Image: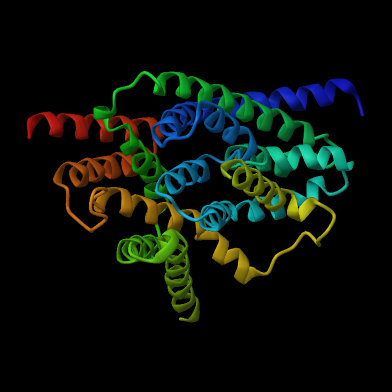
Length: 232
Length: 103
């Protein structure tokens, strides 16, 4: 396998990933600002981006931690949010399972929403003998660098911002931007509405369990609609 | 303590990402699990949105805080029309600041 093909796959991954950074960088900035606003230290906020490395789940982590949730609820909620990565993992498995273990560990760490989105597209269109794992390496590293740098910048900015700016309201806004465009079918709408209502009704549940209970209710509602539609 | 939770959740996250090409499992999942996982991001994020918009942080009770609800509604419309994260955050924050000044 020639070095040029590897290098061209890598840079192709970088190029494919760059446009998505228009959304990633502001999100990273917001997370950096919010981490500080939630009472995390600068190092905790910055290193969370490297250790947890999952945008929405880091925001929920910071929020739950700030509200005094039990450690297992924080961990459980973050795990539930990130469970979608299993779907990505199964989709890329046919292309990556034969790689040496070091490669699989690195690519496992780098498999995020955005990296998956651009690289699975390349995996499916490329010839079978093409070294497409370099594409995922390029797209994953690009996202990783942008996420870390924007978190650090957000932390620096966050320390200087006055609280009356309501910047914590950027959390639901960011999530609205992710959720709303996906509400195109009955099952998704039912899932989102049920989860929202149960989250409100469940505020008094112990240990901040409302996120997990709301997720289960929403998934149940969505699956019911799917089942009714499918049964017709 | 926070470091322990962070590292444990980081490892869990990594385990889920690498799971199906880790060599420990067959690279397949049941269709039922697949359809369940599809709803995870939408439901979790909707729960967080609902609480952030409709829960009064001081009392912990459900309340309709007009600036928040209006700003979130405008942001949702922008999200639907543009699918842009930046535009959604910009419109939502601008709305809550402007309404805050006007009221």
